[in-house]
Length: 109
Image (cartoon, rainbow, N blue to C red; front, top):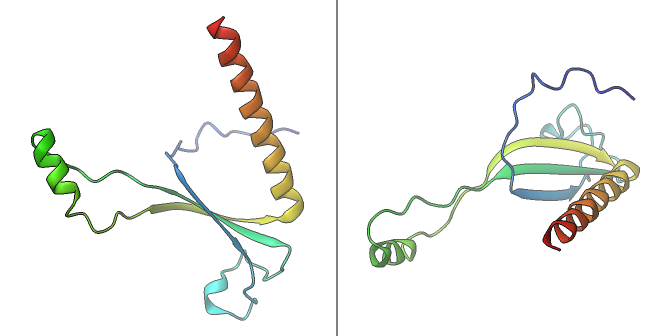
């Protein structure tokens, strides 16, 4: 399999992930063109949560953080994924985690 030219795509920071079972029907206005409403479909939403900007001394920052009522995740992408491909993604993620864990352990000895 050849992935083509991915170098032109921006690399976007992501640290928040939400999965939703796609229970929408194509007639639903919010479904979008990519959503089939198939119960075998999962919607993966990827976002980035930046910590609130807190300035001042450490004591002032601790006081300021108590005033923060919520922080907002900035959505960066949504993907429609079939269950079989979701399982494939799980396996790829598990492999890369395992590989990086082994590399770190090997580097510490």
